[in-house]
Length: 223
Length: 297
Image (cartoon, rainbow over the protein chains, first blue to last red):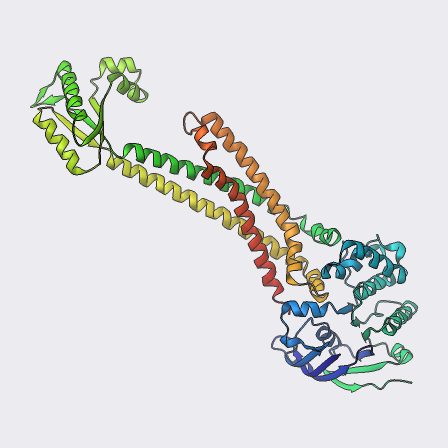
């Protein structure tokens, strides 16, 4: 479903932050992406959600080479990807409902369907009573769940999460990971960037380990 | 789109300056347009009615001798008869002394006093069939043959000066109009650019979520362009009130009220101008947003 072939990335005229990255992700798989700070996790994530184009190599997403796509085609491709950011990136002037509805408005879903879908999803993540609240009035865990709801509202084929538990305490972080497990069981391909080793060991999914811009090891699936 | 729009509105509503600038530019633009149009109409009328006109002056002296008032009157009558049947002349009529005194009264004083104390020139207003030197020479020679001491004062030189002046003024109006467009364009461009800078994280988020460029541009249209539309509308209304007042109170001196409001070119132009301001704002907004979005893949 996703294939990186000898991908390199550099910012401006600087050194390569990612070098010769090659891997394949199958549909419905679940991977952790780990590595030390500055190893290039966020850069690799930005390539995965097509926020950047590689400076060399090829990336194929859902059977399409991204280098051959025009702006509109790339936008349509991004609509198949959900992203959960470490800092949530919720819009402060929008309510929880409107934040979650945002991707649906982007794809042009009618208001009636948006209302139904968003209400159902917010109830599913346990925030049915907080739909009209603004992000600033919600706790970190609640904001994280809104960010996840926003990422999955369009039923994306690929869900990317960048340090999703970084700002949460262990208990809420663990519950969040259970939520990802549920989504994965529903068929969503998931990549979670994290450096939380105990959690990776607990869930035991395949690992992509980045070290100084190189993807050194494709971690073995734990028992 | 109400919820999403709220996010943009919450930030952009602080930029009321765009509304004020668009209102001011529309107001000034309409004033320039109206002034330019009136100037053009006035110039056309003056040129049309005066281009073939000359003034014939019966000289006060002949062979160094002062001509008596009675003789001058005879010359006027005789010259009128000759000119009315002249092949180069379309029409000729003497300017009465009372009329002349009235014309000079702002400079020389009460018409009665002017008429009684100052020897006024005997003038004839002559409409030539065509303003050609040959025709003028023919009239002069025929008057000379009839022993009428007269000289022809053509209107060309002062008409040319007047035309130059009015054209310079019209050009100034055009430049002012263009400046209004430019000022609005820069104001809108600056506002859009600053809003993009403020909301860059939000725009990037839309981009990551798969928003096409048109979707993002639409958000700016719905906020900034709405303000500009209100500004143009307000500016147009104020301009119409001011121009309406000018027409109503000063039309007897400067304008023809009826001719102005039934002039479809003028009215149509005045209606189109705010739309043109809106169009230029629309294009500027689009250009600025697309330029910035193109920095994202």
